Length: 159
Ligand SMILES: CC(C)(COP(=O)(O)OP(=O)(O)OC[C@H]1O[C@@H](n2cnc3c(N)ncnc32)[C@H](O)[C@@H]1OP(=O)(O)O)[C@@H](O)C(=O)NCCC(=O)NCCS
Image 1 (cartoon, helix red, strand yellow):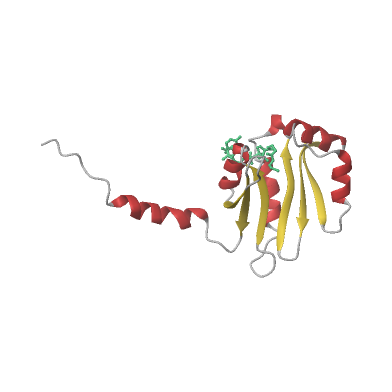
Image 2: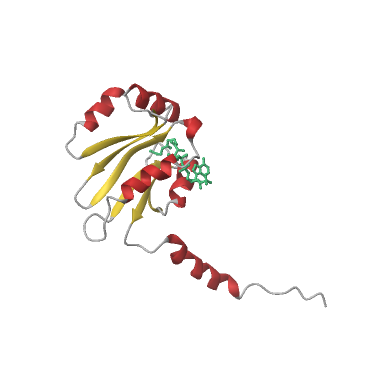
């Protein structure tokens, strides 16, 4: 827990979970917490809720000095193994509109933003979903984009 709290504090200055909040969620029957270790040192963690039909990622953090080294991807890959087309096919999480790094990270891993959650006096949040039954994002978007632009690219005629 001390390592997890250190990473949580470094990643979420404003909306960090307290140790009691961590312990409360981890005591729930369907909530699981995992840490990522490098050379025996805790460098990241995740907390998720494993439901019958979906997986909800409640918290995911990588120690700032170790970010962009593939640890976040490795943790999400571990969660993807828990999905299957027949039983639990989606995983989702809610991310603040301010967290651009996380949007880019999730996009890289095949998540789609499916909903904007709006609060009257606070920032918007986005719901990001990964669906194992959906075609990869590249297959879904690229052909359409290509069609749209194909007929609009014209050579400039200097005459
Ligand atoms: C979001 C987070 C978990 C990503 O973990 P990570 O280990 O740094 O991610 P990876 O190294 O696996 O990155 C994979 C890809 O995601 C994208 N990405 C990740 N962080 C990015 C950033 N800051 N800016 C742009 N793209 C980013 C890149 O495409 C990256 O691949 P590349 O490094 O080869 O370009 C980490 O930045 C973090 O802990 N952030 C603070 C806490 C947080 O926001 N948690 C998520 C909400 S609960």
